[in-house]
Length: 357
Image (tube, rainbow, N blue to C red; front, side, top):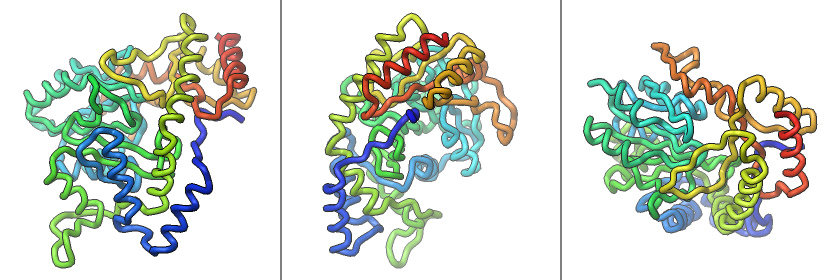
């Protein structure tokens, strides 16, 4: 069976060494030494000032909204994983959808400007499949209207924009370290925050809002990363350059073999790639379903990612329509990409795809 992705598992003995350390000191959670070590190493590796590790990528978004006191309305994208929208709704923030660029799949800055109102408090863009947004344009729009910007950067681990981390843009950027991601901690996530005061607030919020034994200044939650997850992260981080290089080979082979047959995502020319995903856009939904069935019949399981377009969710009111997002979401398919995907299996995927188009 070939799934759209396969979790990277580092050397078991190296992981066990960290587990032995956890057993020896008895410190399993509550900002343990491995969490502290991983925060420091990730900040250095990614080129960011402050990083706060949390239990998953969804809660990272929720903590970001609370840290910045986001209220009422936030402009966001309908072309993303559902957590981008659901994290807003569960925090009583109404998502207002702007449409996407048909080539980059990211929020179109022109669409953002059109729907800003006095009730808008924030913009929540997504670096879709790790493709950097037009961050400078979004920054101009936000400053003009005095809006906060929270980037859902779940896919954008180690993406550079003009030679610096794309995570440094916006008021806060969030990452997901789920097991399916390029870099993972089994479950996990992070907030990247430049403002030191906001960092401290976020740290209170992920620990029930507690400041010290006598003060609880904020309404918080339990969003802490544990030591076993941090241990996995430390092991994966040791191997990350090899992981990226092997995924790059897979992605570039797809591009070479499938050029002129399908639409590819247009990459931001000022940004690097991290090869997290490989989406293709077919001519129609009918063609997509035909390709998907042909692959499934051979135990190959790509993913309709992202589908459906989030502006079609039943629990979102008022109803909104983003035509480009709806169109792309019906025709997009992410092909398998992972370290262990060998040349023969990739060749099989490509041949089946070609014969089905």
